[in-house]
Length: 227
Image 1 (cartoon, rainbow, N blue to C red):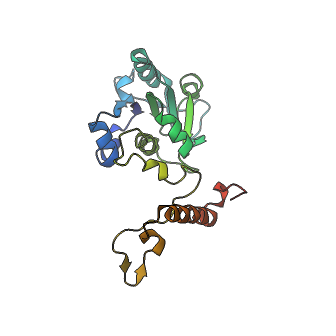
Image 2 (cartoon, rainbow, N blue to C red):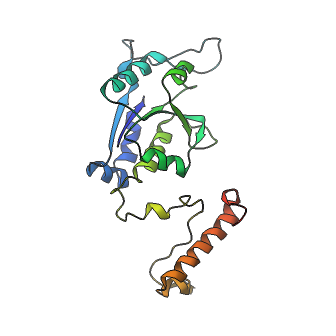
Image 3 (cartoon, rainbow, N blue to C red):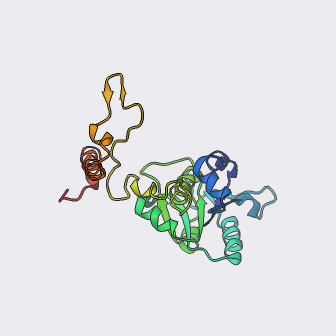
């Protein structure tokens, strides 16, 4: 998978992409992440990428021309499955969306800033808009890092245990059940006996029941009426 990220702050990705799962995925050749500074595509000698909004109002708007030049260059080199704009009014990121994106080959993630991008960018270049929650960030960079992480960890071979991602929260519409590790007793707090029993069926049933109970308690909106 290849992910191209368009941003005016490429340095913001150094931390999230230099460690842990994403770093290992890139080192294994399972994922490529390419950062593109939108300022490099500015037609201004001062590398301006924003201007005042027509009609007045507070804030600045990212200009269409630098974004067009960057996206057009990328699309001249390869086909992209989606050109995604990270926006608070996009569809909310969910595990099924991450699953779907992980099956694709090439993605573009556009990070907005200021009051957003010229609407013509959204009308003519963007194929999908995604939000990471009902709140506003200073820019799309953190949201793009979240999308990249959620997608890349699902690629075959990225996680050490091939089944690990399948047991994550939301994969089956439920939150994950409680998990424990050594020691089996600490300060009088004991691990549930069933997890020490070695009985796979009973352990599976316990985990499923706990997942339902936890989801009903914390995220009842995720449950079907028959659970």
